[in-house]
Length: 336
Image (cartoon, rainbow, N blue to C red; front, top):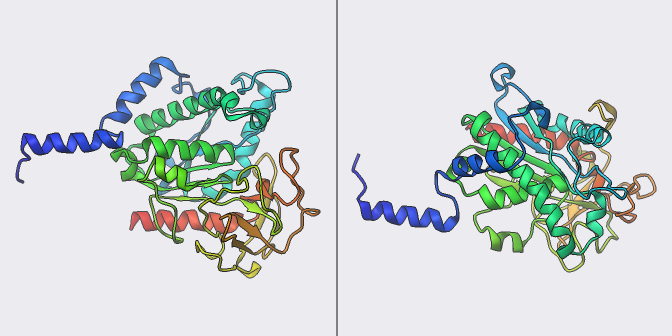
């Protein structure tokens, strides 16, 4: 093999530096996190921390919890010692776990997520709380990459606040060689993924098909009449992929393509499964996922922060079996 000259190596280093990810960045950042952040060597800071050697599964999943915590006059970041909050935190993860656990060994850190009240703040007011939440997710991810990944294929996943955190991770580390080498896909469901995100991190790639890898899978559900939402405000256009036909245009997917909507409890047990519940299509103007065949009376928004027709909390549930199948499809495509 021809040895690279010093000048060529210098150019390569400069290119990597410009992208923000030298080959040693993960290691150096992990060392810094170990000194300054939460101690993710503490097993109590992991809801899932499974043993890859005993599972026989082909990939790992780093799963980030959605919003479950309400400050109720207290801290705007969830205390890691709050037993009630942690019970809800674990329950929310259990509700999503089944989408990934047939294919992946599961890892899910505890983090000081922002409370629901933070979403009512201005960006300037909320920034410090999101920074705290992301610092924890970042530290946990770095610990996972340094201590658990061992070159295994990785599915990065999150819903709602968890999806926001997953996209933040992709912006910071998605161009790092160590991550690019193992990334099956990032399931950032229940959050927006826009041209502003791509301008900030042009190496990111929205999913285009059911089996492309190294991509971001995103969508957020709403009724056909909705023209603004918390996740996709009016004037915003988000990248989405349809979880029934895996197209990115507005081609409708009929409910006959829906393999099963699954409704789960906090243990992760499926309490109801409804095949062919709903169809969907991508709004050509907003990019959001328009859901057909169901009503907001039958599927209310539940949380006061959402209006009727914002089906946000059902993003995973409506398309549970299709997403479950897709995780396996992408993992197989990655493996080749």
